[in-house]
Image (cartoon, rainbow, N blue to C red):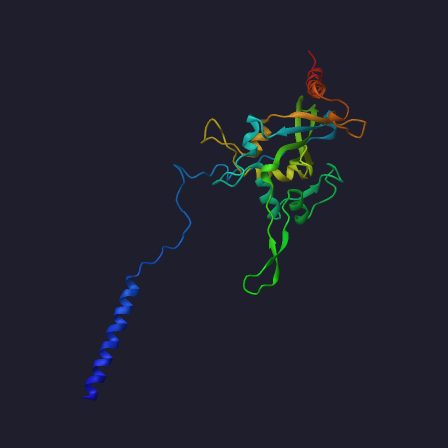
Length: 294
């Protein structure tokens, strides 16, 4: 009799284990998240990703008969300049101009320079922490009560870049006449994003220079990022092409002068600043015209 009950107990145990195993196998498992490996569109975009920028041609000092350094302001809220401002967050393969700079700096491939003490001479380099501070990306430490222990603990909240508050770009460029090719040409030397934020009282909007980037060092990264084309989505240029083709709207903010390179707004106000900006631009055109002999 004891042997009978022992056999029966073993049989029941085996049946229970088999049933549990079958139920475990029948339980649906959640699919693993795998990255999309297809083509998001008709063709795989490889033109801009594999594109190499064209280095600047060498210019002899003896061939530069005339030159003028100007600072040009780009307002990214203008319709023509909106491809530089949008998208304000990474959207597929699209990134705005500031995001391209941020990614290159965070990767350690691009150097930024102080925009306040050293002005625009690219003399003082910024550390990664100083670079983040210029764009408001500062970690905030706060004390909170732990629900389990009831004790105060310090919690560090990671900061975020104020990308949407960068509304303008200041360019430093040199216009020069090259006698070898008998033409007026221009080279962008530096680029400085300008952040707009209300003052502490909230009575006005203050503009603050963030940092300077040496443009020839930035070109390899701009040439790898396509910029949105409002007329044809399949024929996009890179940011480097956009600046090379001068497909942006701007106005002259300052010219090199004997008065510590003062800005136009320091000696003109209102409508006169626009007229002075146009005068400087027209002087460059006239200088190119006068270089020719008819």
